Image (cartoon, rainbow, N blue to C red):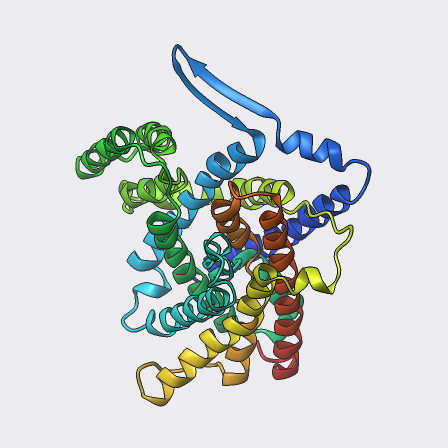
Length: 390
């Protein structure tokens, strides 16, 4: 188990470093004469047509609706594994990260909503600062080397898992538009098919992926965000394999990790992080949308994660994990303010149809807030840990 966790953490940390490079490359290009080419690239229209049926979207939405469905499939597989046989399957093990994640979503969202309450369009982005980017956060922890105990990395990963679960629920409930009941019913019709495959003990992954793809197409046309089809599909991937063989769930999770870590997320970051900084000044940052995101990520995450855990601990509702101290938990609460990938994704859902200015404000707030949280979390954890902590 420990070796598997270490392998996972190394992979996620490497992905975080690649994410940083992709985001920086996009920002550099967006502030050079190549910016027009960058905009043309992500706006390139692509379509698939079979008779009268078509899926026509710009490249950016193929990435956000298509490639990110693989990311959400991986998230769903990780959630299922953790609750069946992972760290979160142990009695009481989920209480601390669950409380932390709840606080880390409620308080940042409340801060953003408070600052943007009088603007219904801007208010749609209330969930943006509620997200945590596990790849970036773990990459920062890796920079601390042996100062960081494995327990702290497991805690951060567990918080991010509950955070992802909360984000999935938020997207399903609040970020849907122009619902097509027919397409939604067609998509739902594949759920009993997937259940039947699982119930009959089908261990081959291909049939699940085939019907999952059909479900994704139907959900894409329904108005419910298509990436949720990946989460639903993950629930039906068998968690037990043939005698002496790795389970289909573990096989698919292992195969997807490399693709998502080294391709899907860097491509998503490159396509969504292009932010032209010309004309940006303090007044740009103090606009309610970026300011709400920055305060949500930097202040809200600290108050939510650390504050909720401290209060629950004082009342005896949760227990501090063995080997950790409250200063270390505070450092983790700051790292939870690194919300890059999921924040950008939720921001695209909230503002993609409202105009360029809000998309600019959203990206500015996410980048500044994540940068402050990452640096602050690193410094706090470095100060609270010795080089022999591990």
